[in-house]
Amino acid sequence: MKTNRETVPPSDMDSDWKDVIEDFTEDFFRFYLPEMHRKIDFAQGVKFLDKELNEIISDSDNVRREADRLLEVRLKDGRKEWILIHIEVQGSRESGFSERMYVYNYRTFDKYCRKVVSIALLIDGSPGFRPDRFRSELFGCEVRFTYPVIKLLDFDHPELEKADNLFAVITRVQLAKIKSENDPDKRYSFRLDLTKELYSREYSKEQIIRLYRFIDYVLKLPEPEALQFNKEMKLFEEAQTMPYMSTIERMAREKGLLQGIQQGMSEGVEQGRTRGQLEKAQEAVLEVLEVRFGNVPFAMKEEIIRCNDLSRLNKAHRHALLIAVVDEFKL
Image (cartoon, rainbow, N blue to C red; front, top):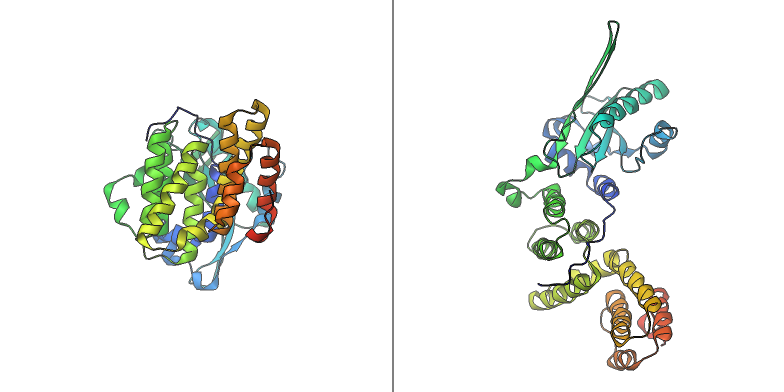
């Protein structure tokens, strides 16, 4: 689809990965680290140590690391071990990344007297960015620290589309983001194909909803394309007689698309009362109601479309976000 060249809005980047690692922990290890997966007893559960991780990095001078995950697992031989997963999206901090890996590793040991396995998850688009060790030496005193690396670019091959693991899909989403930087048309196509594909996968309803949310966060679209995408997916769902999208929209798009709509509404108010902005405001109110409640009564739609008061539409938009049922909506 041809569009005006708006800048693609940024996603939440590595923090999105933090969530899917927690949601699908075993799949993460099974897909990226099969040897480690075979040694972990996932039947015993996995414990995420957010408090401990915050204490380890609280006084760090480095950039924010909310995306890192520290988890405790039980091995099949009965031992409990800690695993620290570092998530990195940039390919420009080569001098500091390995040092940070080392610092967090020894801080964990120093504070808790626990050995920790540090893993680097590199989801950036730079092929040459592959840090896997830290070394420091002075007057014969030497420190060497090496760690396993997961580089998503290494998984970019045709077989990836055939894999059933949830992280195969997640990896393809991230690769699509890399391949479509600053190209809304290409990103739109990637997002549409990946979302439609979810319907043909034998995943649970909860898994599909969670994957859709990840797609929504990572493959963000400019507002016009986002609205068009929503309409196209509704038509696709109707043709396939599949019920997932209404649920997906309520659970996922309220956190993604609706924020974009609200931002667009505010921008429209500031720019003036043009006809185009009124149409945009009307569409935004309708979109919120349809996303949250599915079918909107015809009389309600007609009232919204006939409204030419931008301030009133703006208040109606906020009201639509807060009501519990569609019958409570008042323009």
